[in-house]
Amino acid sequence: MSERMRKGVRKIGERLKRRTEWPEATVAEPVYVEAQVFGQSLRRNHNEIPDILRKVVEFFDTVGLEIEGLFRISGAQSQMLAMKEAFERGEDVQLEGSDPHVCASLLKQYFRELPEPLLTYELYDCFLAAASCPDEVALPKIKTVLKMLPLGHRITVKYLARFLKDVCAHSDVNKMTPSNVAIVFAPNLLKPPGNDVLAQIDDTPYSNKLMQMFVKNYDILFEDEPDPGFKPKLVRRNSLVSSDKPQRRGSATIQALALSTDRIPAEQAEIDFKKSPSPAKRPT
Image (cartoon, rainbow, N blue to C red; front, side, top):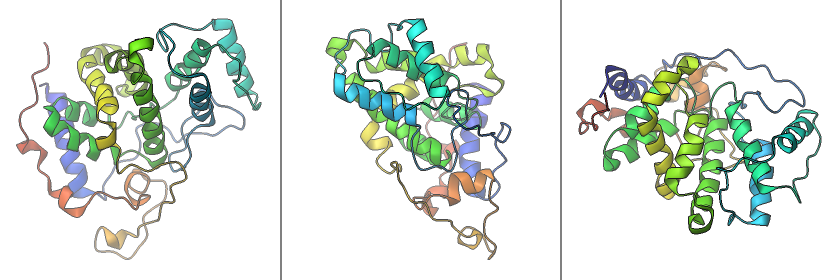
């Protein structure tokens, strides 16, 4: 296990113990542009999923998931770009009658172009450190790191994971096993700070394992995660530390902790991750 991933393990425990000392996000404050979809940051405190994700999932609810090569076979580039431009113009795009492979390619492109990946740069090492542990230890750690995500990311990753679980349920026809889903989606959802390509390649076994666990253990990992329409409550700082002043809006603290009624239980904050069973050694 590399020193960087050891730091990731320590960071999980340290974050939970301090709880009020979260650093600002590692990316610049997103700028929201009307009618722009691709290349637009997820709204961190938003309680709905992106419209494009909802439309693609509803499209496949209609046409079914028994399509061989789904998400592995690329759709016609010209059709995908035309559809992308329609979303960018703010049109009410209707996917009915579209080529399923084009719609699948569109969804992959959407996540690929997010300025900050769905699982965030900030928590990259935390997710990999958790996934590098044996499954019985990794599951509770991954649940903990999921709760560190901003609300909008938590809702979106749960919705996407449920969809990918359904995709894998038809793997006898579409050939999209959890392993193949991980190969396709992990590089788009989990990226190292600075988009370090060599680090991402080196970490592939762990990012793929994380994605596979999202699918295989969906009911366990996401049972407590919020759904679209979740109504968060602001939590005053004195519920976390000795102060009667409200949390400062815009900080990573309020985005990842205070905007959720489903906060990490106090007893869980005392977990000492450094005493967990040693993760499997990374390849050198």
